[in-house]
Image 1 (cartoon, rainbow, N blue to C red):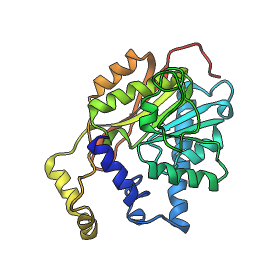
Image 2 (cartoon, helix red, strand yellow):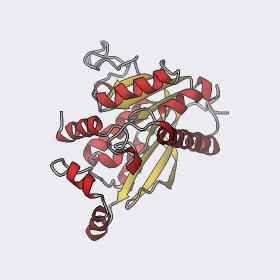
Image 3 (cartoon, helix red, strand yellow):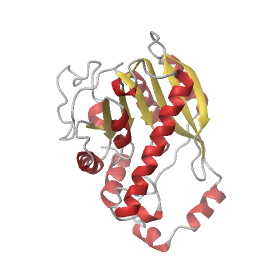
Image 4 (spheres, rainbow, N blue to C red):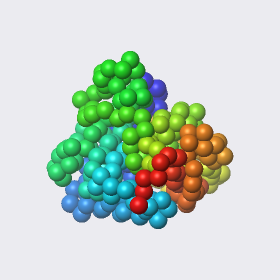
Length: 272
C-alpha cells in the first residue's frame, strides 16, 4: 500500500465526513440532524446537476436513467451514491478506504439502497476485462464490501469529483484510463481535475486562517495533497480511449483552478 493510500485511510478513520467535504461542521464527528441532512442534500443537488448536464449535452440513455448504470469513483460515505441509486438501475461505489465503504454501506442500508455495490479501489484496479480477477476468477481480496462484478465497457455513467486532485498525476492518469475502460460505448465519463495550483504565498494565506485546533490535530500528519494535471494530456488520453464530444466545464475549488470534463465514448448511438 502506498504512503498516500495509508494517509487517506487514516484520515477517513479520523474524519469520515470532513475528508469528503471540508466544512467546519463536519470536522471530527459524524454529523447528525440538520448538519447530516445538509451533507446529503448537497449530494442530491450535485447529482441533479450532473444528470441535467448529461441530458443537455448528450441526451438521455435510451432506456432512461432507471435502466442505466452509474459508477462513482471516490464515493466516500455515499454522499452521491444515495441520489444515484434513486435515479439509476445499477450503482457502484469505489473508494480506497474500508472505513468509508463501511459507513457508506450503513448509510445505503438505512436509506433503502442495499443493492448498491461497493468495491475497494485496489480490487477494481485488479479487475480483468470481464469483471473477474486478473486471472479471470472472482474478486479475491476485494474486501467484504465487494458486491458484484464490473466488466469493461458496461457502465453508462462513470463519475468522479473532488478525487483526482488528491491523486498524484502519474497514478491519476492510470486511473483515468481504467475508468475510461469501464465506460460503455455510448456512455459518459465525467471527471473533475485541478489544472493550476495557487501561488505559494496565496496558499500560505489560506492555510494561515485555519483554526488552531485543526493545525494541532494534524500537526504530525501529512497534508492533504492537491495536484494539478496537464489538461492537454488529459484530453489526448480521453481521445486515445475513444472519447469524443468532450466538453470542458468549470470545476474550480477554493484556491484552485479546475475543470470538469464531460466526454462521450464513441459507439453505437444509444441515446434518446
